[in-house]
Image 1 (cartoon, helix red, strand yellow):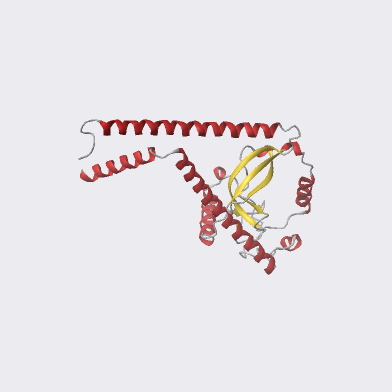
Image 2 (cartoon, one colour):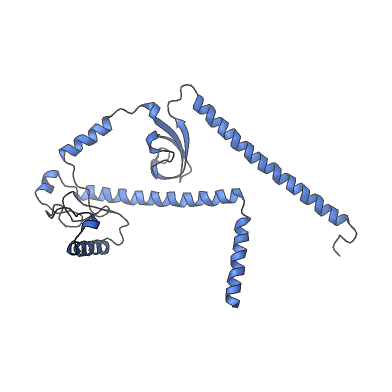
Length: 262
């Protein structure tokens, strides 16, 4: 009973402490979490890039002809084209297929327990490969044409938004993103021209359309910053008034008979 009571009291104490957190303290905690996430993304990006460079040095990437000739993956040694056909949807697997699928899934997880990566497989084949251990397969001619067509498509400047990104190195860079991506910057890392390396994105602030010939976006941004500053000033004024009232109350108590400490 006493143990339960102590836990309850401790929980109440923590609740009161959390309630006393100021808006500034909450913002600082959120910023600290964002920085930790950005640093983790930066480290993972560096880890992946180092593996790609290793594949390049060791000649692990294969040509389309080599893959179609039946060469196994140069990362894990397992087949790329196993000729077994793709897995049906999970809900349509027979009991025998489900047991086989579960065995393959367990074996994959055991082989790549420390890779911290997803998996891929080629359409029409069942063998899974690790994004960290296995070099990506070469594209077909059709796939290369589709990618080239996408990259060559003209993007209108009025469809791009400018973003100010604060990186883990504390440098701020201006990047653009297509408006279809929504109100959140999609990339976790980006190039820092000052550092000459890729850095994690701690915070991303949407500036507005990249093409702002009328200057309306700049005016809207200044108006938003002005409103934010006024709210902050109002909070500070209220804090000053509360402090003045507290000082007056303490002064009054001190001046009352018997108010001074003995």
